[in-house]
Amino acid sequence: MKNLKQTLTFLLFLLASVSFLTAQQVQTIHDPNVTPTITPEEIYEMGQRATPKSDLIVLDFEGLGNTQPILDFYNGGMAGGGFGPGPDFGVTFSGATLSIIAGYAGGSGNFQNEPSPSTVMFFLDENNAIMNVEAGFETGFSFYYSATDQPGSVEVYDEVGGEGNLLASLDLPALGSLPIPGGDYNIWEPIGVTFEGIAKSVKFIGAADFIAFDDVTFGSEIPGGDEDDDDDDEEPAIPLSNWALLLGLGLILLFTMMRLRRIL
Image 1 (tube, rainbow, N blue to C red):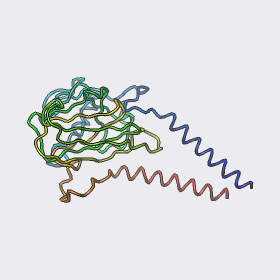
Image 2 (tube, helix red, strand yellow):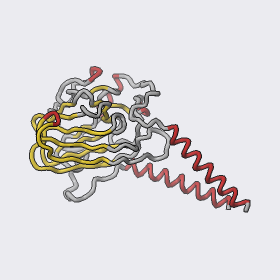
Image 3 (cartoon, rainbow, N blue to C red):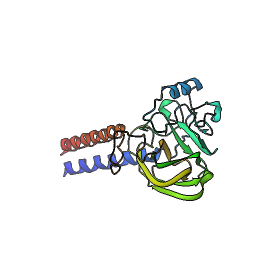
């Protein structure tokens, strides 16, 4: 009986601890309690260190500022905060579409484990987050996304500004969050779609400040452009860092089981 009471007490303590930590989480992508410390020089260096992953166009958002509009950065122009000029891919973003840097890198981003550290895309106005590619793109479109408890979606159109015919759409379910220290947005799901025709814009839809994107890729349904994968039916690979987080959870579970064994 004594051992049973100790076991129940320990389990209740563990449950209360997890509940407390969850309650303390900041649920938005941008953490308003954090004062960014990263400098413009450091942001520029992050952009210079970013290397292409394939011959496809992959937007990894490195070299962009913290909570700044992306604007013409990927059109050979400037982004908000005076960052740029960026590479000329012929891609522009509406003013509501922003970049943000992870908290561990000196920004105010409430995320970690992103596929290409340390900058991602998010938005604060769910009705106007639009990416335009005036020259058009075809075959496929893909990316990684993270959303803890608010779902989202994307829509691909054949005219700029999210207008014209709808070529493809994707639902983005909420992914939850791993109970580990650091950014709450720590699960990143690869997703993509193929379509017929020529696309010229993409609308990013969801609860503002509750979903983030990385490695936006053109011409492939596999984010990052895995050139070695010739099987169109194969699922995109999960980032290695996600497996590292799952391993950490496994170690926590192992510790808990060892603790229970001692009590019993």
